Image 1 (spheres, rainbow, N blue to C red):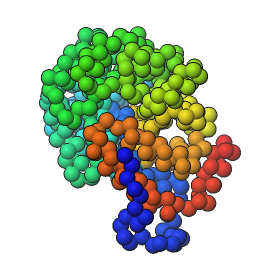
Image 2: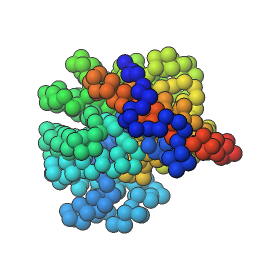
Image 3: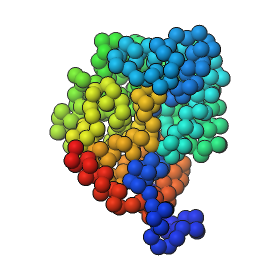
Image 4: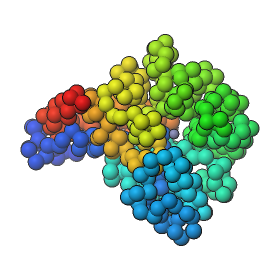
Length: 378
Ligand SMILES: [Zn+2]
């Protein structure tokens, strides 16, 4: 399904080496690599200035109205206060549409985002599923026309609600049946703050019976293990796993997931905020890549973790000790694991390969060596 690389796609690149001015650093290469992300929660894509503006307009209390300080939490109480407030500013479909549109432009500019799949949990909005999805689709279609960024939507089962609400969500998705919705996933945690993937087996069975794809948030939180990943694969029949870091607790499960080539959507910045894992060669995501797991990189809750997809590559991969070969592989892995229709996936991959070849020709190898030496020195 891969397209042939064109040696000179635009017909205007110099055939020889780039001049000194044209050369780009490894960080710049990583920022400019074309990217897809498969793990991004819609509410958390709201731009900081938009959140503050809407909170003021609608009388929603925030811990601070200074966008530089708003996401600088040192405790989970402040984080949850901001998260809850963000949910409250979505007063109507127009806000949904605006937020959807704005975040795409930002991610395309800062990190060359080309495709994104969004989790959204309709149970936490004050209006219905159809209105929410209408707003998202309108905003994301407008953004696709203006910025060339494709999208898909994955309604997420809210784990803090009951398993029955999860089944009802799948029923709503099936009744609505719009093509932009690609499958089901999850957000929040079970009421006892566990992952408890087995609680939602009925919802996943219903989704599977009707041909919806499935992914689950497992192996993320302290206290979880490879066992939750096994439940996601064997009981929920997930085709992807979100996070999955604690799979490393069981080498046999790692080996099986390597054989299955099951994609993992890993989100570096969220692990630093929520698990305190600093970026370095022994970070669990780096270990997952080194052990041959099919890792993709994403932002999770970009605004709330001050993450953007450009930085997830440019800051994190050098710190993990990964050069351009791994970076390329991770960028392409996200396309291969996307749930968009096959023709769209093939076209995206061909575009990625062409653009990567162009960037490869500009990359300054000395800059790669410097970054990797710095990471090895720790
Ligand atoms: Zn998530």
